[in-house]
Image (cartoon, rainbow, N blue to C red; front, side, top):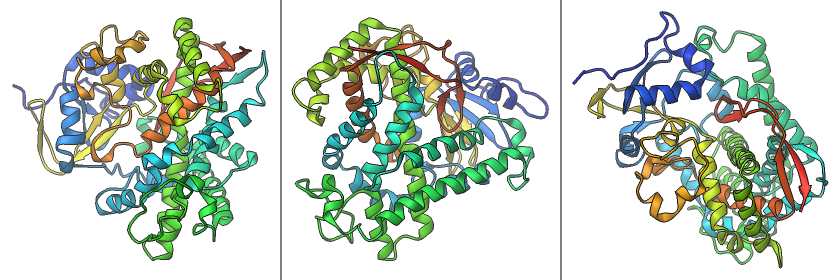
Length: 464
């Protein structure tokens, strides 16, 4: 057996960087199809290994998770944007912040947010009319921003603030699109891209500062967050004491800061991470779901029937949407075909053995949902849209980590339950009222921190 895993040849200067930047999704699929379980890549200043076998993915994320950490790529841009928030922190910092955040994502609290989700969705749908054409990506992103701010900041966000957030997502996302030349240009060089990125961070922080200012002094008022205090017993983090305190994430962090357990920088990092990660992945899941349903009328009609049942007598509740079993299968199939987070990275703390190869300490492990989810090793006809793949008898035939849209192990996405409930509530409200028909080009994708359509996603609305 070769000591070094196989992999594609690259350019003398940029290695495989140009291939990855030109088409990250096609490149990852080609590598997985051509080279097997472990693929050696040259993507920059450190050795990179792509893992394509669910057994190895499970070892890295779950069984041997303590042997790996989040890698540091020496990119100050990521630190400037997310700092030591839950997405990027590691070790004791991550454990402390995760423990603080857990009560805000307790299942009982999340379930009690159903009314908030319905109210925001109905408010947005009031602006939709029969025959209108909307960019569904922008529409659902606007909606999920409002929901995450209500759910996790215990506040409302103005339409102008939402517009400001959306306008500044483009320069933020552009900074993290694959580009092999970026390693040659320091972040402090005042290029147009770097200037726009820095300005977008400043603007985003100003929006968050405004929300925090409006909340300051209310984090000890139980009336602020009914979902966390009125009739819902949610265990608070150590030090909170009174179980009737608001348990939205901002309140939890403000109280921790009052106790000297958080700095203003900690607070900022978590809120930026929550605002961006908390709305973006759900909005993308819904965007791809509406796209797939518009191209598969029989599936759309089944989702519409479940939506009608969930909304027929009263606003849909968490209990109602739990009954939308086919819709849940559709969401899983959407996240399989179009995983918003299309790759994760880990770094071994010491030399490890994966797939029969020695992987050196300090290298970068790329664990790609895109490559695994679309592999014919784990899925029959993997390019086809087939919600019935998620029937229990078929799902049980696949390896556990042939599907991992929310990651896995200790660092699994803390917002999984929130995202799935939110997606089903929004689908119930939209699909009970409108039929959406896609009127755009063949779907084209671009990679950044998450996987986005590379163009508007126009949908024609028809009242049902």
